[in-house]
Length: 486
Ligand code: SAH
Ligand code: SF4
Ligand code: F3S
Image 1 (spheres, protein in one colour):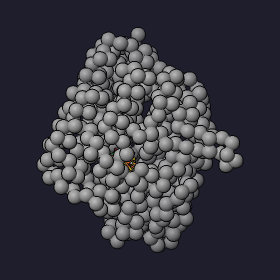
Image 2: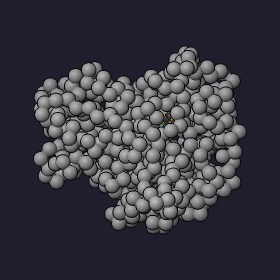
Image 3: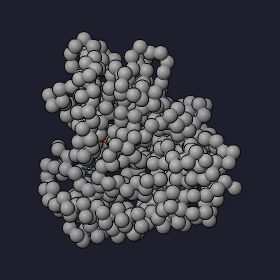
Image 4: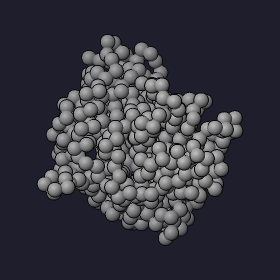
């Protein structure tokens, strides 16, 4: 199935090496990429066009929405032209993310003028944040549905078909969509997302997610393992377990005889099939345990890559952010990763530059943490105040924009220095690579990733999409490894 990845606008300059886009999916996707769902054509009477913004949770949710609407007589299409229903699955994480959606809505507005029958819906985090205000602000919108209300979509669409506007933004303490088999639209047929939990209880002071996604809840472990089995049976070779904070996964059977934590879940999924690669995202530094690290070390098919967002390298700023760990704690977790899995385990981060009251010295601490960890990858942003968050209510957004941007650039530059060095140390070694498809640049080249999530590009030979191949890496562009099959 084709997987159009349309980069409309990179928000807040995340430092994603360009070659990472060459791979079909990567473990953590910053806001700023929008993916148009591929088409399913099974002769249904109506056509759904869905665009997803923000994080992987949204991309994964769009697959659930497509599944619910498929049952209701909607095929998906990758063309806005000819669609009967347009859904934007939106993100609120930074102001720029919301602006991108507003711009897209105005384009869709002019399209709707030419196609008066078109229905337009807004899903996801912006829908949850703005609720029915959306209908007042954006006259073209017919439908506003929050992340926990997707089961209500058929009923809401009926309401819209009847000429009314429809809103459901109720959050739930239980909804995990465990029984819904996603329509795999985000996938290349090789890699897939499995959502293992929803919501977040952490209340980091800068973050809107607890407000838009509601309380944290974990999905039934058996349904997760079953989904992994089904994916293997359908030919998939890699799953990414998704949650805002996967290390706090906690599920117990109703009769109380079975309790599963994240390390145990990871092991159960790894045991589904030794040829199924297992990734996960995101790990919160306060929760990642040695048990998880030992489980990772014990299974070759659990990929040696951890997305461990630090946000800042300074303990006072971390306290203001309400991250509940300090710098020594974070450094100790990194030492534990190195101790248990060795130097090869890749680590990536998210950093926020210019958070409320951050001094130059405190910014320097972020740079020195980057030097300490030597991250393989980083998604870096400048602070963007979000209405209703703890920081917006209690702290002044007092760092001038130019200073935020300059600090962000310094963070990016420092992080890229280490990323290049981390790529360079892989040259001359043989890597096991899962082939994900042909390289964006050439028909003759294939592209895949190693366990560390680094992109590897090599001449195709006889290898096929979905194969595991051993590639001797001979050079690096600084953002991808180049080699040949051995
Ligand atoms: N659950 C993940 C984060 C999800 S949001 C975690 O705790 O690590 C993805 C990233 O967006 C965050 O890690 C943070 O770096 C960034 N972010 C969140 N809110 C932000 C804000 N108000 N301004 C700038 N960046 C923000
Ligand atoms: Fe936001 Fe913090 Fe939850 Fe991550 S852990 S989603 S940054 S509140
Ligand atoms: Fe954005 Fe919501 Fe994800 S705010 S980052 S889409 S959880």
